[in-house]
Amino acid sequence: MKFANRALLVALLTGLVLSLPSVAQVNSGSNGHDGALNPTSNMLIDMADHPDGIYQYTSINIPGGVSVTFKPNARNTPVVWLSQGNCTIYGEVLVQGETTHGNTAGKG
Picture (cartoon, one colour):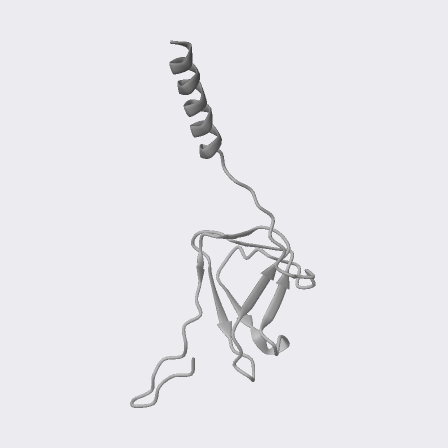
């Protein structure tokens, strides 16, 4: 009887430990020079001042109901976000290309 109670206790403790939230730190390589990205309303990021398309944030927090869109830089580079801390996105990050014009496809 003692063995069955012990096995039950181990199973319950294992389930408790596995259900706890996990926290892991990730080093994305950001130096944080772009500060925190924390918009409170829809925003357009003009990538002209980032010719390589790389943004180095301290943290990223896009709340629900907020959309972030981009105006491409001259080289039309991809957007890369690096963060030193938390990255929480409940809103939208819109990276679709431009619309088509007749038979001409839009830029990516």
